[in-house]
Length: 388
Image 1 (cartoon, helix red, strand yellow):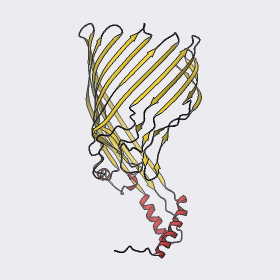
Image 2 (tube, one colour; image 1 turned 180 degrees about the vertical axis):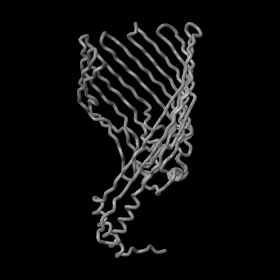
Image 3 (spheres, one colour; image 1 turned 90 degrees about the vertical axis):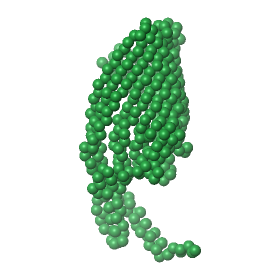
Image 4 (cartoon, rainbow, N blue to C red; image 1 turned 60 degrees about the horizontal axis):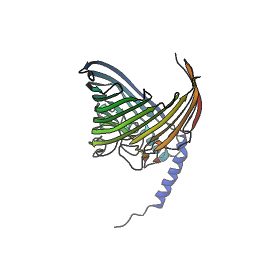
């Protein structure tokens, strides 16, 4: 077995052509014309019945019928105008081929998707006394499906492609509605002559066909929305509010959330070889722990000061749970001072007072490194709000 030896003449020719093309690229014009129109018509019928079983026990039962009619038109055109000859036949041929490769048009009108759902709700509430109550509730949730367009692969669409061929090529994808079963236990209480309140929720949400934005390749625009088979979310929230002295209110809250794709399925299996299986992964942008502490003091004259510190745990930036693509945990301090009257409010604000640096969107692209979105920096400003 012998390794072929590169031809020095061919290498020199290729290097020269590359150099000539490179000098032309900054002047290579590309025209984009993109339009995505969505017409959504939604109507619903709903009703609710409240009944006192005893003086302390109440039940509420409701039902909602929801129908959503979606009509979508997409036009996506990439056009490279004719490039003037450069005087080299081979180079002219290469440029013409590249221009033809970049030029494409996707145009389909009035793609209709109609969805409807029955959404029941039931709440059982028990009043232990005038200040303490607990409740159990169930509610079915719903989000309509639709049509997803891949902005990267749109440039690869053959002229005259119909919707079926566009779906097979991973350029568009029709996704189904998302349904949830929401279960919650709630605790509500007031203490110390209503100067303190303590509230808590424990919840569990069961998803069917959760809608997920799936990365097909490393290109950040090469994405489509598809449905995951089954997934779940559970956790709790605690809120404490105290008025220790007149004019001063202190609020604290803590949230914990755990998420998992329990049946990740084979997402986009017609587009990705073997599909993308998310089973066992966590949701993206779902920090486990969030908490905040806020204090506000108001004078009788109308002046006030407010300070809030908030913390968010780290979270995956992609449903694939790439360990190199994680949003940072962060702690942010916000300060406000101002004056409030009956019909207007003026205030000075300082957000992210410590100028904390953190990322809120951090997917990694092996082709170009990382694409990241930083959290808001320190901002000092003023605003006036009028109410009528």
